[in-house]
Image (cartoon, rainbow, N blue to C red; front, top):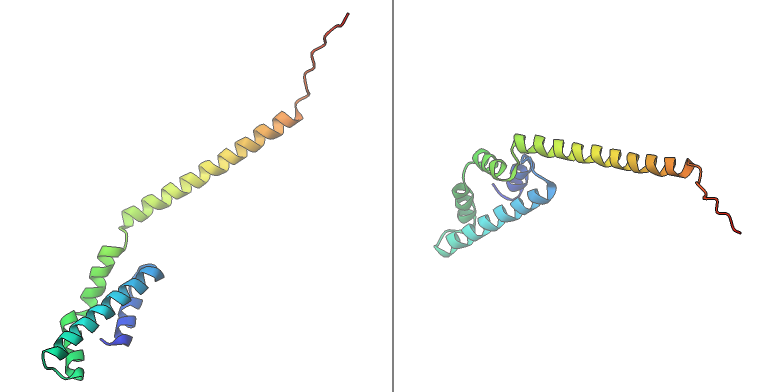
Length: 118
């Protein structure tokens, strides 16, 4: 799982693009650190690269774990959608009510008090 493999793995994640880039950086940094340690222990660069990929683990399991950690639960998504929809509905009603009040106040005849001077 080299550079292309990291991109392929993270492409399947169901997270935001920003989170995907963050996860890619994290995985690449981990692979680089592992490769460097393995080279220092005596492995050749190609062997160290292969071994660091092997130690990272099964790509399918990695995707599942990242999805579990970073993707909101379905119940949370539904709750957020309902809260957003409710807020928008209340906002529209509030604006509509304010406009209706402003319009009706604008069309009311002005009441004048008749004061007699004299």
